[in-house]
Structures are given as structure tokens and as C-alpha cells.
Length: 225
Image 1 (cartoon, helix red, strand yellow):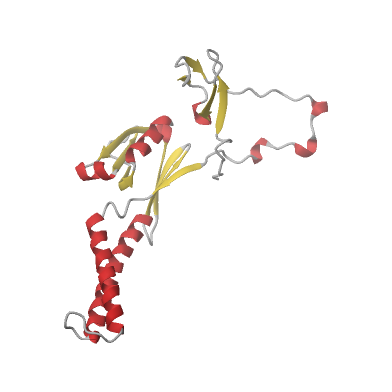
Image 2: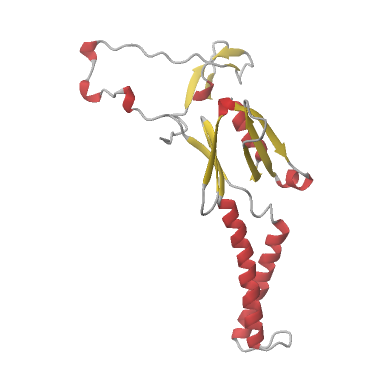
């Protein structure tokens, strides 16, 4: 079961023992030693302690059985492959074709010839061109939405497929290697391919292409290992 947590519920605030600054941290970092962002000195994030409640102070109506508490896994980000940046020139060409076709169809509907072509010919030709352009854009959008990488505070969930959906999951603790592949254009436009493998596996288990801000995704994974 996956439950959504608010930002405040997913963080804890500690007081630095050196400079007494209040430092907010993600709850998954509890137990680690971090450097205070104020004084730059290290301190340990000690887990909060729970103490027993005396029986006479227990309000039976408000007692929650631990077995009924939902898991604290929460989806923090969902990433889909980019469309415009991946098919930049193709998308630009399709938009130009749609714009020109719309204008030409407008003139043709008024009964005027366009560049010497009869209105009927213009309507048919521009209509076909517009449908083809929208078809390409629709195809790229569907391909993008057919793939998703969900980043939770505990694992990665990669889903792909349109009619037949397949899912690959990998816990952050099991991630052994993360590979980023970008060419020059992809670095400039800030997208790329990420491949992830786990301990005991020689091959990459999750490979997703053309995801936006891949370095941020890798940083997210590294922080939770």
C-alpha cells in the first residue's frame, strides 16, 4: 500500500548541538551523521524515542493497532521521457505544418485559390498534412506516457507498455550501479538515458531513455542508498 505524505510529515527538524541552528532533514536520513548547514560541523541524527504509556493514561478509543498502520512508502516523483526535446526538430516541423495547413485551409474555406491551387485541392492536401503531423505528435506523446519511473522513498518502480504493461522494481538499498548516458545535445537540453543495476546482477535491470534532469534522478537515488 502506498500512502501520500506531506512535506512536513516526511521530514524531521533537529537542533544542531554546536550552533543550535534548526535543521530540517528527510526522515530517511535518521541514523546518519550530517554536516550542519549553518556551522558546517557534524552531528548525528538520533532516531526519536517512543516511551510506554501508563495503563491508566491510555484512551482506548484513540488507540491504533500497529498492524493497522499503513506503510510509510510515498511516491515523491514520477518521471516520463521528454517529448519536445527528444524530437525537437520533428516537433518544430510538425508545428510549422499544422500552422501553414490551418492558414491554407482557412483561405480554401473562403473559396480562394492558394498559390494557384484550387480550394478543393488545398483542403485535401492540407488536411492530410495536418493529420500526419498530429499523428506524429500523438505517437511521441503516447510513447512518453507509456513509460514512467516512479521514485518513492523506498524503491524505484519502472512501468512500460501500452496494451501490455510490465513493471520492474528495485529498492534503493539494492542499487549497485547507476549509469548516465548523454551526448552533447542531450547535455545542452538536460535529458538523457539512465541504466540501473542491483547487487548480484551483471546486466542493467532498469533502462529508461530520454528522461528529463537525469542528474537530479541519480542524486535522488544516491541520497536514499
